[in-house]
Image (cartoon, rainbow, N blue to C red; front, side, top):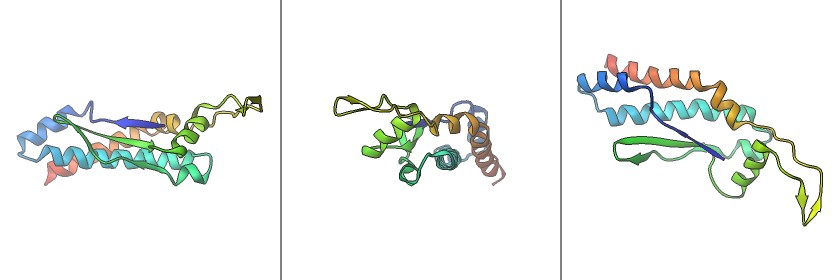
Length: 133
């Protein structure tokens, strides 16, 4: 289970930075890193157990033309599948027999909802810092 973090809605800062002659690619990447760190902290606090908690991380900076993005969450492998079951719940099947269903214990979606303002503030703070330089 992963989520994508983008710089949408911060265009006014980017315009000001361009006018100030700053390297907006560097600023955008630093801003995304700070926002991702906020979400990672929130996901780790809410994760149902340590096996998932220690595997929550961010990806390398992604590029698509002039856009930058980063993925956050449990990114790949068996633990990503396990995290998905804990996030959404599971049917409780094992070897074709019915077992007790796994109740969802979301930790990614609540972080994205509840920590969004804090992440945006962290990202805006990076822009403000660069504008002061």
